[in-house]
Image (cartoon, rainbow, N blue to C red; front, side, top):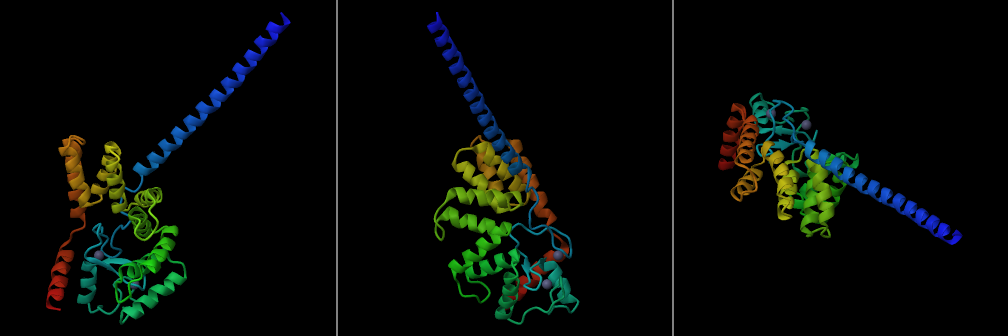
Length: 281
Ligand SMILES: [Zn+2]
Ligand SMILES: [Zn+2]
């Protein structure tokens, strides 16, 4: 009898231990699921407005590709061509349309100004100089390694543009060791900050994994910021029965509205003016 009692006690104890372990395991699973849900909530609820914002002078949003706008090294602020032409027309062609500092006389002076800001740890300047080295722009000798180092520095300091570019380098594996996890991580941070192309890339990556619901969510956000390739991709999801007609229609209308908001008579005038100047140059 004592022996049976002892066995029963052991069984009860073992069951109790197992129950505790099961409860701990379920709690761990729940916490993991909840963490993933919270991560997704942040990923899909943030970054619906483009991080590029609007021209600080005319207050109209920029195009997502930043075409018809430029950045001066004095203040590292993007300004639209419409406002640059307006400044030219007022006889202020030799100073920055935003901060009124003199425009550097040549590429070397421009690079020196940006370098000064880089030395002070300015993320935007780091990103700008990084791109100039990476692509060999504005008289700077192409140096991809130096370019990517500067871009990494800018990405660490929170530049969405640099995060996107470094993400692309990890995804392609051409300059940095291929690492899709790092690429997605950077695209996610940039997308949450409102980077349209990082959002597009997340949509395309989810599409290749056949996670079409998640792909559609990303692509719709990018389309509504005015990103065109996303609209084409939503159209193809719709053609393949993976998005509804309503999804496609809403994305298209959102894209058209965003694109329309970037237009103004002054910007159209500047487009014609700078195109004619380039043509005659
Ligand atoms: Zn403007
Ligand atoms: Zn300036």
